[in-house]
Amino acid sequence: KRKSGDDTPQEWKQKKTRKEKKKTQKKQSQPGTGYQCKHCGQEGGFSQSHWHTLCPSKISERPTSPSDLHVLLGRVAAKRDDDIPQNSESERLLAFAIMEEATTGRPSVYVPKSIFVAEHTEDWHTLVVGTPLKVKAYATPTRQNKWRATTIIELGPDIEDEVAVLEEER
Image (tube, rainbow, N blue to C red; front, side, top):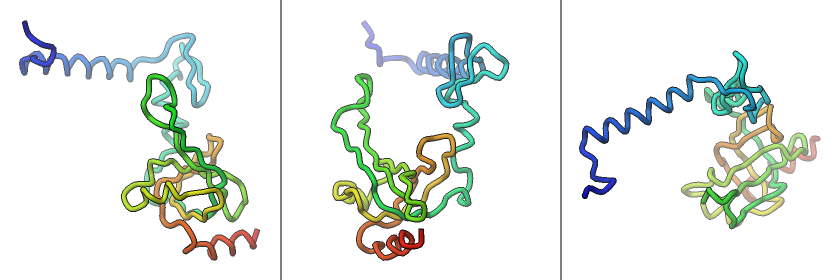
């Protein structure tokens, strides 16, 4: 008796082709009545209907060139580092910080834990409310937080003076 992983190259290719075909069909098809895009609220069953993964408002938020990225300075306003998975089906943990912009004083920059990689991994553990932070971010006007950080440039006491000057100017 053959095991499930013992497919012949031809069987494997057929399975792969079927999966790709299903994926393409879903992307090309439109959602039916009762569906609603979670990003823009467009209901299904109309000619303008789309799946949430293809939402024009979500796609337009993503940076398409380096000029879409802006350098922002501020302080950590909140930090969430849960040891509990987001939901029972997922093993991903929900971890992020919210940065308050130094120029506006508003907590409007979403800083995901996932950008604390390589040399910044340890920095995530020492990050506390009030820590000065300098990031590259792109605008997300349809979201609660108006910016999403993509890269950590610098953090900690080295940029304290830069942040303090901007805070005094507001």
